[in-house]
Every structure is written in structure tokens, then in C-alpha cells.
Length: 331
Image (cartoon, rainbow, N blue to C red; front, side, top):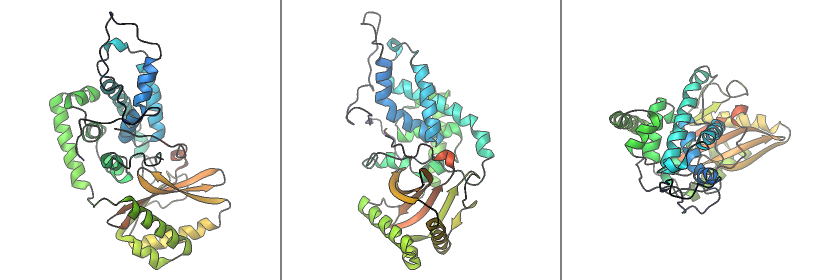
């Protein structure tokens, strides 16, 4: 991914091309008093951007909501006459809080049962479809790759490569010198580039066709049909945290994954009130499985080179709490 210095903001309550807070002028004592609700207005306008930054650092929508709530409390006490650039200031604030949260969760992740996957993110329809950089940055594949970075490397990479912040702005956010940040950025970029799988992007029509064919083959138990859609090294990775039934180790290979899928579907058909809905999670086709009034799992389908290359199965109930809440992301 490449850095972009001219970034648009997706807004909760304003047109996507509106840019009200990126260049907020300095207010002095000579100016009129800052309206009481201006803190909330500035924060609300930038919330999709701030949420995306925190989510890409943490990989958890639930924790991101907590970080933004805590950050807003701190923001509400800020003298706005001292804020030259609202976007930069708030990005710095939420990054610091996200890094604190990430370091605090390190021990929990070390003790995690089975593979750890990011919390799935249900996106508004077509929310990131027009922005390839944004779409890749929230993909499961990229978020899993970012887990191999240190917290500081991850924050620097995200702020620089996805959101295009200057090295000086990032240095203020992570508490390091500009020289150090440049070194960290180079190291993180090299790490990601060396490990990122490179495929030609798949257009929306192809994605829709492959997803539909997969669902038809799976529903009818068509083993040959399934195999024709799977890449030879397709992988199934499940995250249950030891709190739900799921494979404790990744399943690798087209024949093994196809057999695993068919067995899983046979078991699922015996469950009462089972309902499967399609969704866009992390800019990827996903199946949301409901059992009664509860979400039982989210299964993301990664497609590249016209084949399914990875299934990400999130079964940990703690990671499904907010999965039915559509999110807006932005950079």
C-alpha cells in the first residue's frame, strides 16, 4: 500500500466529500467563544476515520468503541483554541489510547486458546468498495499480517501507509523521535511487503459469482463443484477462544477443506432455527450464521485469482457481540 496525503473523510451525518475538520483554524481570545457543542461536532464528523485507525491497530471493534469513548472524554476537556488541526490532534489522541489498550491485551492474547482472529467488521453496503487501499487495510488477511508487528510498528504502519500522516505527526502520536519513526516505518513496510500475498484484484461481479457458486455447491453437497472453486492451498482458520466448537488448528488443502466444509454443513442442518445471511465483513463476502436469536458464527470468504484462498471462521461469542451493527470506515 502507498501513502496518500490528500485523504477524504467518510462521515456519519454529512456527505462523504465534506471536509469540515481537516483544517480547523486556530482560535484566539479575540474570537468568539467556542460553542459548547463544537467538541461533539468535530468528533462526530471524524468518528469514521478515528474508528478505522483504532480498529486497524487493535483488530477489535468492541475495544475500538471503548477507546473512542475514553478518547472523547479526554477530548471534551481540550481547549479548542489551542487545536490547530483537529484531524491530526484526534488521530494522535486515539492512537495513544489504542496503543495503551493493545499493550494491556498482550497477556490475554498470549493465553488465547487456538488461533486468534480479528473481530469481524460488518460494513455499510459499498462502504469501502471505491477505495482499494482502505478495503485491503481492513481485510482479514491484512489484519492477521499486522498481528506479526509490534504495537508501535503497527501504529506507525497504519498511520503512514493507510492514512498518510506525516512522520512528525506520527512521532507525536507514538512518543518517538521523527528519525526513529522513519526507521520503524521502513522496517514495518518491508515486513508487510515481504509477507503480503499479491494477487490481481477481483472485481465485484466475479466475487459475487464465485460466492454464489460456493453457496450452491455447499448447499447441495457438490464435492466436485466445491473443489473447482478452491485454491490448491486454501486454508480454513477458526477462532473460538475455547468458547465454541471449532477446529483448533488451521485446515489446509482443497480436499481437506472441502470435506471439512461438507461435514460442517451436515452438522449445521440438524440445528434448529438455523439461518444463514450474506454480508460484507471487512470488505470481504461473509456468511453470518444465526441460531435462533443469536449469531453463532461469521465466516469470511477470501477470493483471489478467481479461487477461494482462505476461510476465516469467527466463533468466539465475545467477538460476535456487535457484528450485526453496520460500521462506517474512512481514511
